[in-house]
Length: 391
Image (cartoon, rainbow, N blue to C red):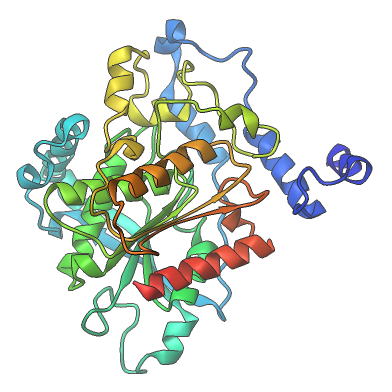
């Protein structure tokens, strides 16, 4: 902390828009998650990795609970009873490539005696702006439409598929909801490495159809997410389009969209972003612990991970739903995020102006929105709310 402070005053801020408190927080987070290359396991020793211990260590460093001030919104914990969500697995998942066998197996497990009681926990956020507009007789915490055509946000939190929860993103989701005057459901999807791919996609898909079953139209559901949650939001949208269903729109905050390639910004922005990870060659790389923990890297595995339901940057984006992408110029995955927008734009050359929007914020890092006192974070969150409100 002292070294970072001294550097700030002697050399100046690392980026022009960084206040001291922000640089100190960035450095503290980076120190906490940085892993030295020396001593990292390799594929030669992959059988010796205890992923139960890896998961326990992840829980020790999990993202902290965030608070939601009452003047911004309130929330209630809810549960989605998986057995009550009516989905035809064969119709929903057949022909989905790398995901198909896993999704079908997970659906089958949910129909067993032990799986019948499985629930997905979530938070239903009600913004203060909506409560002020609502009829006092309406139950705003009932997960069903308050009026015909009501929009709702399904939010998928970030955390490299190994950290995070609805609680860790409560403050961010509440502010987005308040600016948009919409309710949000944030789910606690299953986390890797104990629940590898496609458990997270299965949970997101189940949550989406739960909302439909509760009375929301598919075309009124906005799917949103940050980082790994942005990956999941895109993958869910691609999966839904596979069966001819379209969402209201997408909000993507620093989405992680390519699990196969380490692009130049990984090195270019390493000294700025707090985000860091072992290389893909390491069995503890988050892409690998998410997709196939304990499996040695191979060309076949890389090909599987390039499937659009794993790395959605490679999806077919023709006639894609309205999308807002927000990212920071100094994040290490900015190159793949920029490629995502370029791919969407290339597939939709005649799209109406404003249907697809990419906002890249100067000097900002990965999911800078979570640093709620930053002026750029406040501005971006307000813009995200405006985007949802305009859908």
